[in-house]
Image (cartoon, rainbow, N blue to C red; front, top):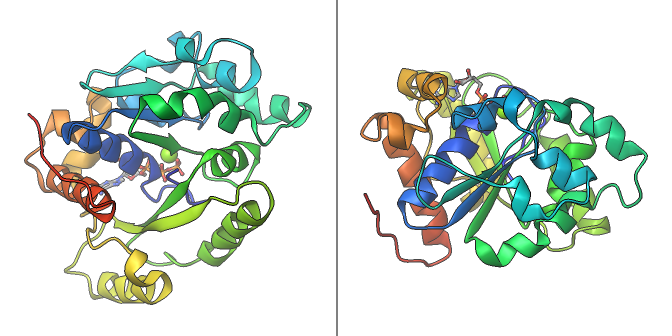
Length: 256
Ligand SMILES: Nc1ncnc2c1ncn2[C@@H]1O[C@H](COP(=O)(O)OP(=O)(O)OP(=O)(O)O)[C@@H](O)[C@H]1O
Ligand SMILES: [Mg+2]
């Protein structure tokens, strides 16, 4: 799961492009959009208003989960899209039995079909995010390399710990990743240092630079790996995927 309760820190940009980069490394990947904003969905060119069967149905209706998944424009990458019905998912879940476990139960049969399942979540600690944390094995926390990066981090990590000690004992923090990083700004270096103290070796060595190409790509319905893979943003997300695979001791071969 790619998560941080803070808004606008680069969660969706990281979910879209890390998923795309993992696919470029030959990893069958599923991107699950549990955010009612549906930015990961539109970021791959899907029109939210045209999604009839997606995450909402996986969470709240008894449809076979394969039916909620679409092939993305990238090879090896599928997406569970967020439709406009997701706007009421948080409320509708509240009345349901076993309401925190819905995503975990839905994704269960898919685990053996993908090497990675990435979940993009909303900027809150509501039931949708709790569903994500209950389903996940690992959390990657994007942090904007600017002011207030650490604000709210401790309480988010506390939430992760609470989910771990109650409903999901296998949950671990995979690490923090700095986004929108500009090394020329001395404040950014200070933030990196603070985060390095906080995360230790769980802070990804790869930082994602601030890049106009990364901000443009979603308006074309493309990940950076399709839009401009040679840009510094594209190279950074490939490096992040390489680092994630390297941590697992997996051989990294990029396929074109
Ligand atoms: N590395 C980057 N360089 C330039 N712009 C970026 C970068 N990362 C993200 N952005 C831009 O910053 C904004 C917020 O990014 P994004 O949507 O990924 O954050 P988020 O954490 O998913 O937001 P939300 O909390 O609303 O879901 C977007 O306009 C995005 O295009
Ligand atoms: Mg987002």
